[in-house]
Image (tube, rainbow, N blue to C red; front, side, top):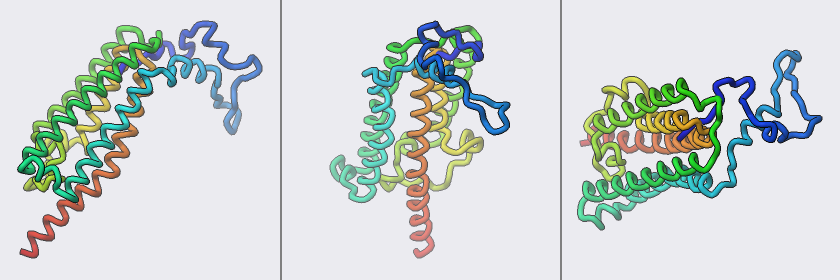
Length: 240
């Protein structure tokens, strides 16, 4: 996750070849009022740093999109059928196995992410010391959220134990859940953002946006479903 944006944003420091991405006649489009304008050529130059047809970039996008899709589909299938629990002999063992697979998939995703950054050019404006240390700070904060989330939830809680029928006694409200919802997802996104900034990679920044979008979609599906699981637990406890 490297972010290669120019330190001097107004000029972006692009080469003359990159500057000629649009015909000479194309220029600025004005907004209402005529004062705010968007330089289409500058936007085109920025996008010119990322080759979305590159095989490494495509592999990174696929791995980013696949991971949350995989664990949501498998976890819901397990919740409906208990097939994994039966196959592995217990829900705890099944959850540990799924968690291990998810960890391996995340390693593959990070590898694809890094390779995609390496295969694309850097943005000179971010290829400087302040951007590197900014990225390092963002990465550190993201890592803090990820690790503290894991410690608060435990392995079972982190890797969808509630879908296996292993429910927590109460909602976790300690740090980092006291600071924001879904800190594991946002922490992971921050890690990729920081990694992109450290590598001055526009491709990494674009892939970080893909990570954020994929996690947002995952949260829209996971949140209500998990709440329903615990609602049924509370309803069952009251009926008893």
